[in-house]
Length: 82
Image (cartoon, rainbow, N blue to C red; front, side, top):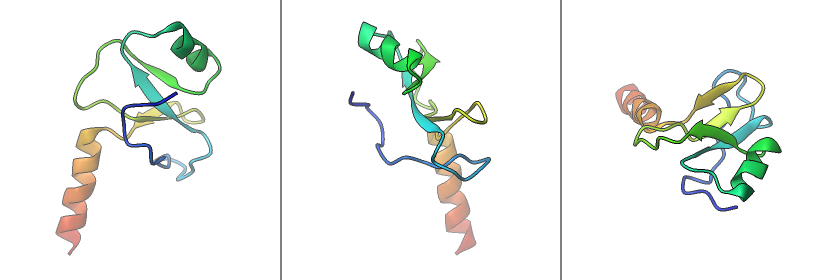
């Protein structure tokens, strides 16, 4: 399955691990996508697709993360650290 987001896996902000991180899927689900969600390969984020959607989900901490605003916050923090 091909996902329309950055394919680089992120680590969970709580445990810093990538082991329990899966991609988040938005929009109407096809039968195949429903199977992927039920199998725990992706997390369903809902039918509404917004610009600031989270891209990743930690199955251990039940936390979605990796949205656009989070990425911008990281860039601003890195720029201010210089």
